[in-house]
Length: 383
Ligand SMILES: Cc1ncc(COP(=O)(O)O)c(C=O)c1O
Image 1 (cartoon, rainbow, N blue to C red):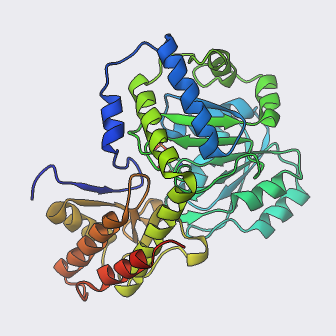
Image 2 (tube, protein in one colour):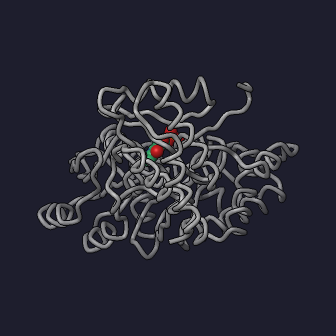
């Protein structure tokens, strides 16, 4: 195997397109320059198309969790009542962050592998009063998407702010921040946005701003009012990841050229092909078709086989990396990302390598059957 020939199919970091790598390798520019300000403005204008918002969007030099913490640190004061809608690991993380900032967090658990049930949310919201509602757009740990529009319309009937972790969804799965009543939307660079790790993007509605500005809790690096002061001059409060900004500029060029609707159609097609392949191989999909993620497919490990042993063969023999299960799902599922810079032949590589790895560990498999199923979906084309 050629050492450098690797196929990264995890839900972040994801492969970075050559045009983005090239942009990041350009000479560093100073961040207090007109050149940087022009780039920053261009970035935010196009992020607004991706987020479908007129709101301010702060590009912060954090990982996704830093973006989530920024959202919480600026919206929460100790003792605030928070409803956290949990469908997996990242829903739990959002709740943990709010708790770390002293919120009185109620977790509404839907079970790993399920999506948020709107009826349960409606009941909770009508019986209680919350300052914030937290949700995950794409629960990466299970491969499930939540109905952000549906949750948003329920939250909008209450005084609560609606905070959404769109870290693994935004850029690959449609979101309409304004129309869907999202007050703070967070995403990160290293997933569907096609960049290396290191940037978080946090958009804030006017309703959320009122809370942020009146919040008396301490914050410094995570302060949105501090970020806003610089943002008004297309600057940043602290030294930004300048090369990552250049990369984001190039990634947004690619997204705008493809067109966001086409980006979403592509991701849905790749998910359908991956799912068809898994079914043809007799494997069980972890998430139901109705709420399966377009950017990541989770597959149950066959009876008696630890998913991590399949992943070991994939990596060692074929240079293919899938993600394993997290938390309670460790060893029980494996996850194939088709997120960001992913296209049809990536699915074919993933499925064909999976077939060979299953055969290698002695699981009965008809070589080519998964590939054929994926090919059929890919040839049928868009939905
Ligand atoms: C849905 C979701 N939220 C939050 C995070 C955390 O992001 P980061 O690892 O960049 O801090 C991830 C990362 O996998 C994620 O998938």
